[in-house]
Image 1 (spheres, rainbow, N blue to C red):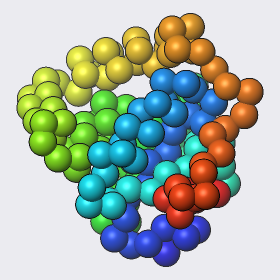
Image 2 (cartoon, rainbow, N blue to C red):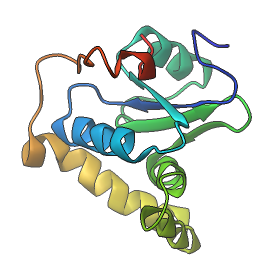
Image 3 (tube, helix red, strand yellow):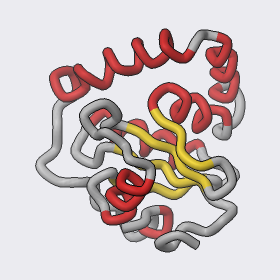
Length: 139
């Protein structure tokens, strides 16, 4: 385990103050029928640890990361598509977008990420999970 992450789980790191990111995390939680994912804000201790460990430039990657012991770290559109692939039908069909070259997928992803605060707003602090969801979050 790395900071409480079981080896069989995947960790979704997200911008904890972004309304779009928080809504996306709530969607993933609701549709994660196989209980694959755990979550932590990028601003958390484990988020900071992985950012440092993988030398992530938070000026370039600041909205979503997917980590697993087995596969390491994915970011941007690749992370989003890998998450979608685990959520069951019909969302898992989004894997067809892997045929689009990464630089194009990431250009679209970056455009949305750059505008997410303007379009969806921003919270003052990171999400605080309810008692029922606390087990899905790492600090």
